Image (tube, rainbow, N blue to C red; front, side, top):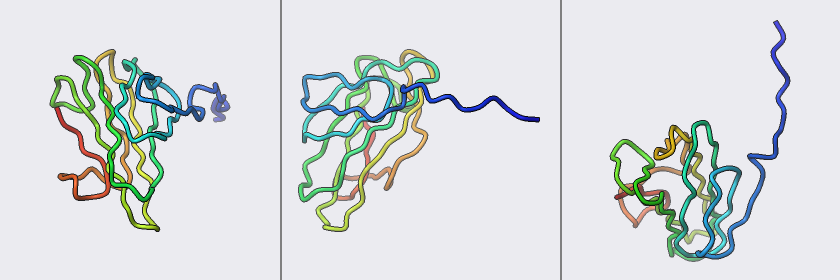
Length: 128
């Protein structure tokens, strides 16, 4: 049986966010280019979102707010995702891929390099 061919809809295309006063769209791939605080637009069911930050020589985090009453995991409430880079020259880029479950709930599909417990590590922390 032959399935339907994959059709690229441009929804998961590369986007850029340059400043903290912009809302990150709830679709596509967004590269965080400023060490700042961002707000992610509300999810919708089936929305696919990837956020990444390149490794650099700064340990200053990039912070992504889920928005009022929106969550990244089952803890609920208004949640924040913080991306902590590495200062190592051969450091790893940080990426998080989310899928929208409802209008208030994102689900984490993948995180690279890891979900971490403290800001002393290279990776991502989810908190309320």
